[in-house]
Image 1 (cartoon, helix red, strand yellow):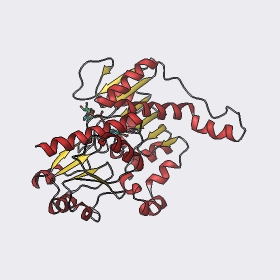
Image 2 (cartoon, rainbow, N blue to C red):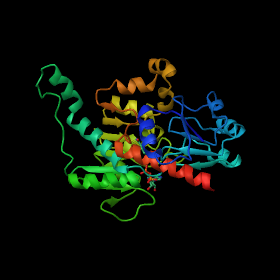
Image 3 (cartoon, protein in one colour):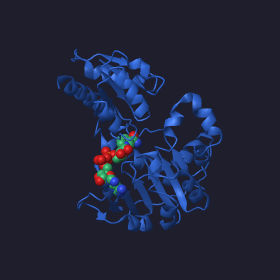
Image 4 (tube, rainbow, N blue to C red):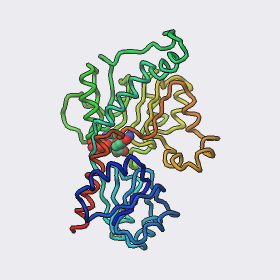
Length: 317
Ligand code: NAD
């Protein structure tokens, strides 16, 4: 039996489709996020299934263990929201979905890049007002531009493959990457030479605020930064300064530092009043989407199927 938190209607559909021939697994959907208040709902289940915004820290894990949970199934690749040491200490197994259509996230990066660059979001609004003026919509070609990809794992590599099709000059910085259809370089070279920078490394202690004031100071003036990885890779305050000084010409975010807090509807007004996030989105050259990089039919099916396979493996061991 599995309690699925932060459950959305679209997920129920994809899980139902994958569970069709699977009678051994009983799934209960909870719309609420998992946190210290809602952990009580886990009583009587063998496993919990969570997403990126669920809180699975030391306190919650202690409650899960107390409620008899033996497995945490993540419906995502990143696991920075889970205290793995605490799970291990309580003998709770943690599984994730390491890969679900990396192309979905890579294609969303391209959507952010091209929308910002060609200003199609502004054009969309203008045309609806019967305004066909091109002033302010001037873009640039990606062809022959230098595009820096930080982190060349599954998503980074899918992006590199698309960018090669654009005829861009692709730089990659990744301590574990081997030779490929790109130029491998160190982070400083990437920061100084790139016209567009896209982040695809995981969030951990060494990558927290990887893009800070110092990193911005090394970049070209008017650079475009895209983050579809994890919000805290970028120091939001440094971002605002870089936007003000026009060092940062374009910013595309699918993830941002206060994402988990913003996800909780009751805290949204409080956060939006005084916060860095509302200042960030007030810049016209900033485009934000709400963690939808993964959100394609193909990826949802892969997430549901891998989660069910993980649950079966857990149950059989
Ligand atoms: P991956 O593990 O396949 O690749 C990550 C790469 O980053 C690895 O090659 C690793 O060597 C590299 N790396 C690690 N530390 C680095 C550093 N300091 N500098 C440069 N490179 C470094 O992961 P992936 O599947 O490609 O996913 C990347 C990230 O994308 C995940 O961590 C997750 O946070 C995020 N993600 C976002 C969405 C979304 O919907 N927006 C969906 C899935 C994943």
